[in-house]
Length: 293
Length: 286
Image (tube, rainbow over all chains, first blue to last red; front, side):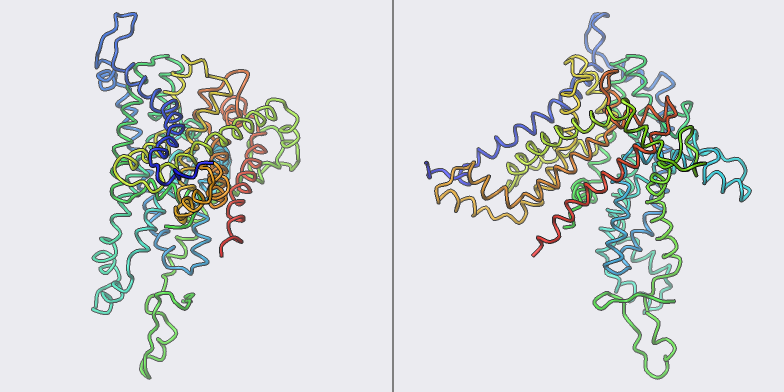
């Protein structure tokens, strides 16, 4: 048995360990996306081939894509706003309670991660449908016949719920680093609670806020199942358009261009959020349930 | 207002003298009542769908009505006897087991390879391997679908396993990396100097020390595959579809309330699976 070359002295061997993962990544992500990019930049072979930007130009001129993209962005904005309005107080609440309660609140945040996608959307469908509990309550308190399923309302409710963890987790990480003695000091110096919050607490929490906002907005751009089940087919979002162009219209080049556009927007935004708040790795760590921050 | 205070928290008390007798019991920094209301309401929003899943599953066939008109085990009976449902569950389990094994092997190797490497390139590789966590599933699904059409992988177990393994890798990478955080590389040299081959060192020294991280990663990769629906919708064929795809069809095409039984089974299974790593971890903490 050779005892001469321990693994620690051979850094080259480490690179070999990366090959299987990179090969799998290449086969499932890089090559398909690369092919998609190439296809979107070429004329169909039947029309002689050659390079073109037509498919991208069409996205802006076909009249449909931009409408759907605008609707997707506005839905994403509303979802982000809802998630922020609910997530900020919740994250703040988490910083104020006892350790035990905080652990419970953290588990509750992770529940949407744990609930199966189809089970969750099916549950929202039964809760929000006509004659369901929420619809009944709304009718009973006199708000009239509100259509929740088959409209953007239902989509927003369901999307905000599942995206809230992505708002709460970076926020909680930012808020728990703020020294509350600063607030007490401000109060002691005669500041009102609101002014103390606005001048001291809010600026210190801004990193987490920005990270959470970007992350929720970005992730909500790519939702497919929720709008397909809870939304209306007349108000489809960008993911549904992408699916439709691929499977129904078989417009692979057009779908490729649209997919690449969505991908670029997503990666740019996520990269930004990551620089602001180190979110990708943070969420990976939390999502796998390990507690070390 | 009552505040729960614990020794060691930042809550300070007014230790006022004779003047402020009435203020003595009050915290300077109490948690306002509205914060409790908002906190509890948001917590309710988080768990609301999960609360509905299990009661729904004891309804009866016919519609998605809530609350169900009559309670029965019909939906479960249908789930376990209808070949469409039980068959898709079997497919999902096969795919999830194979995908999580592949993701665990590949992801653990990558975590070991990246361990203790710093600099731009390893950081780039790490980000690259994590990227599927934030890439919109629909973009991946469409690209994978078109490429798999050429490679004749649509509708095949191999296609599902490869795609699901790829999205499971980030979870394994994160949990194994975290387990390696407390790993002393001197142990490798010690083992080698005692005559162990690298393979033997890995099996007898490294693997036992990171086993919990590997196991956690494997569970997450399994759950991710079991629950994946967007890619699966594109890779389905009339002969092979997974449980989430069958659930999707049950809502969109068939209006089959058996989905309620399927949902509660999936939710309960996933919850139990995710609790295992937590339970396994606890007693071993010094």
